[in-house]
Amino acid sequence: MNVVFNIPGQPVPKGRPKFARRGAHVSTYTPAKTVNYENLVKMAATQAMAGAEPNAGPVALSLTLNLQIPASWSNKRRAMAAAGTIAATKKPDADNVLKGIKDGCNGIVWRDDAQVVRIHIEKRYSETPGVLVKVMTAGGEAA
Image 1 (cartoon, rainbow, N blue to C red):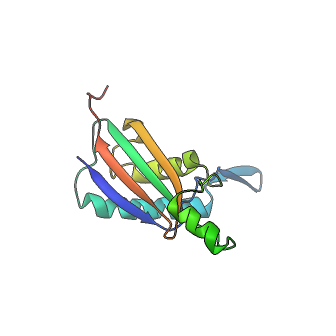
Image 2: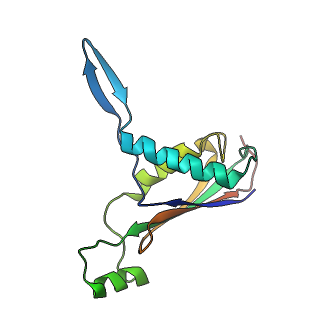
């Protein structure tokens, strides 16, 4: 089973849990920006799966993170970034974006993100920000 879908907009890294004191108790919550992005991932994944069951075996995941080119850059620098001659070495960290996407795909594309056995991530600048997600069946048998 191969699934390909696009998550529109600037990639959002998974935020660390936040803590709030409520009287004598401390509660933990996920930042709203992270929750909103994971919901966007779920929506895009659900649309791509078109009612198919989540994959039960090992999968390979490929992500292409297309980051917005900073508006403050000159036209020459923007063109170089779009052409790929300027590497996207700024935030967000690719591994933090990966966490949010894996969590958003749980129960939709695969049963659990522990099934992801191979990962390829590319981070680059683009005029249209978003994440291209490719999920392929990986060889082998599930443990």
